[in-house]
Length: 176
Image (cartoon, rainbow, N blue to C red; front, side, top):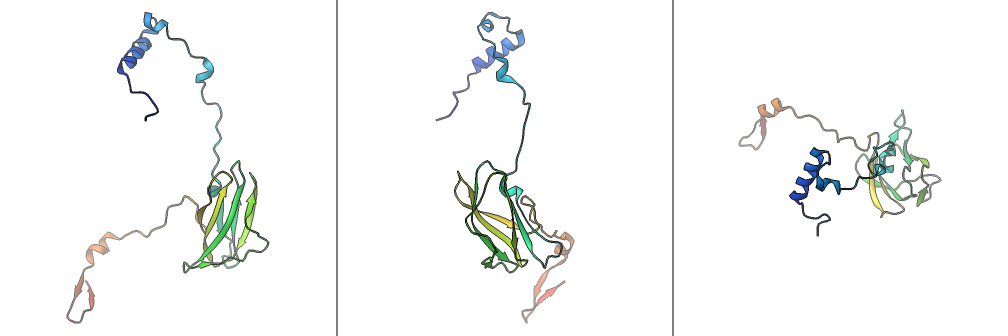
């Protein structure tokens, strides 16, 4: 069932006539004026990034030393980190050994926490949720902003059009 009534062109026609006549016609006199408090302009706006967009996984200047996961809880609710999984450069999951960290970790609103991660970990999966939501995985790539596009090498169109594959009797590939 739709949330609004069917559109009535007759009402739209009457509203247009009232608007163009300055509400001077008889039918328009019955329309009560709106309270000015109902149509004030927007006077203040504050946007805040979600915690997963404000948090960052980054390496130190000397990448061999360590990497850091900087968690920032920007929400108005507690943030619960239930598990942290590390992925190495071979894309294997590794158990993380993090000194002084007990899970689940709870961050209060506006609280920040920096967690030292081994330098060979390139990706993290955090299983987390704010109090009113269910636990879901969040993915972090080292030294890559959360909304950054996946880098791809450009395709060289000329080289593709010049490359043909041929098979001879010995089943070898010849590039021309």
